[in-house]
Length: 173
Image 1 (cartoon, helix red, strand yellow):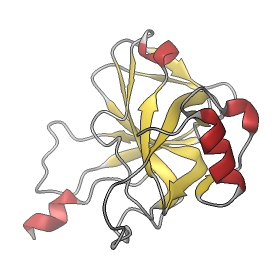
Image 2 (cartoon, one colour):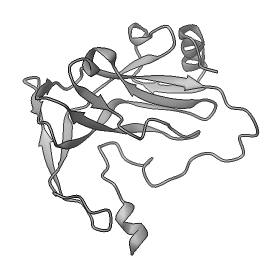
Image 3 (cartoon, rainbow, N blue to C red):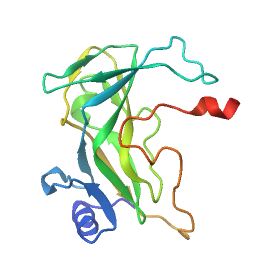
């Protein structure tokens, strides 16, 4: 079951949900908006080969924003640190940006119990679209679990505060 606005607020205040920094004005009926940080990675390889380490171009952008190009994949990260040991976070895009042709969290929208960090976001533009640091780019919802919480996430992607590229190539080494 999904947490409502009041339950998200209660659990942020009692420490069961981490959204840092937190501002109550970002709360929605059953989610909380998150913002875009100020760094992007653009995948340079064409084609991308999962058996090889992917090349990226780092893009730092300012309040003037940056235009995303179609047929490119970008990685960014949330400005906020988000997570919980009690609830499963699900990160999705904002409807307003989807209607402009920006796909967010193409495949990796489901978080894990215990993961608390700035999340790497996957961005794909259908048409050129300008984005800005600190803009509300997505929303996170929190879901209750059933069964024992006998394992919290302790994986390779939870120790970073900037966008993290794929490490799938290591599985082929």
